[in-house]
Length: 97
Picture 1 (spheres, rainbow, N blue to C red):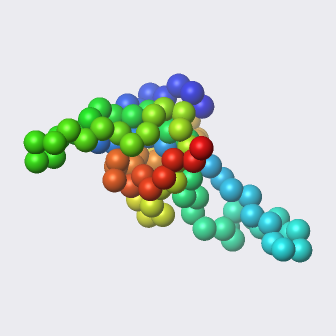
Picture 2: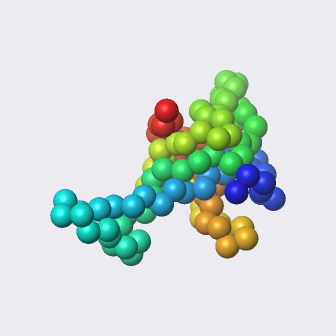
């Protein structure tokens, strides 16, 4: 998905979680219902900068970056049957290079 109808407000990001296949040591692929929530996803849209105590805080990443975010962070939403997350800038923990 490259186009989105959802445009985050300042201080928020729109992320598409990436499903991570998990395989046991013996090579068995685990189904989705046995896995933890994804904590990694691709940034689809970035809201503007925010101001906190007179300081300007810019987004920690850009559109197209793959990020690691807090497990229970954000608000889950759906667009065209695709799961998406609206995350605060503070929910981003790392950028995957």
